[in-house]
Length: 302
Image (cartoon, rainbow, N blue to C red; front, top):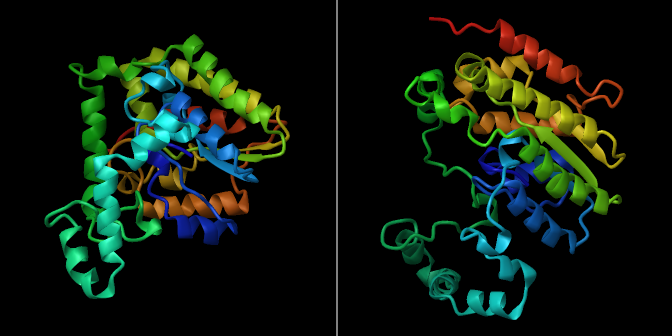
C-alpha cells in the first residue's frame, strides 16, 4: 500500500525479494482515508503481512469515502450497487471484449497493436505491468539531477513557496494518523505491518528549511509522533529510509524532489528483505535525528 512513491514496484520483484505472494494496492495521490478503506477490504482475505509506504503527506483531511469520486466505494463493499455499477459499466464491457479478443491466438497480434494506444487504450496484457513504467519509458531522461534541481527551484520560488505548508496542520495530521493507521493496526494484531518512510531526496526537506521552516518543524514533530506510536505495537516493523545518504543525496535518482527511480525501488525491496534500516524501539527517534543533521548541514552545489 502507498502512493505514487510505492506504485511502480513490479509484483514479481516484490514476490522474489521478500518471498511472498503479493497484491499491489498502491494508489497515486491517495490519502489515509482511502488507504485505510482499501486495506480494510483487503483484510477480509486474511493477509499475513502488509507493506505500507507511509509519509506525512497522506494524513490530511479529505472528503468522506462515499464522496470520493476517485474510489468506487460500493465495489469494495461488494454490495449490489457496486457490483451492478461494475458489471454494467460501458468501459468495463469494452475492456472485457478486448481482453476476450486478445485471448484468441489469431487475433492477438492485431488486438495487441490496437490496444497499446494506437486506436484504443488498453495496454496492459500482464498483471505484472499494472502501474509499472512501460519498457520504452525514458528513465534517464526523467530521473536525473537536472530535473530534481529544477523541481527544488520551483518549490522555493517566492511566487510558489507558500504552498509548501499546505496540509501541514499538526493536529489534523495526528487525528488522521490515529484514526486511519493506528486504528487499523490495532484491529489486526495477527498481521505484520512493515511500514516504511520512503527515501525522499534531501531537497524535499531542504526546500522546507529554506522556504518554510515552520512546515519543516511540523513535519519533524509529526514524524516523531508517528514513530513513537507505531513502535508501541509488537506487530509493526518500522523502516526509515529518509537518511540513507547514498540514495537521498544522489540527485540523479530523482525526477523531482520526492519521486525516485525504479533502481531505488529495487533497493527498497532489498532493504526490507534484509531489515537493514529497521528503527530500534529503544531509540525511535535516532533516524529522525540523523535526518535533521543532514538537512541542517546540506548545501546545494552550484
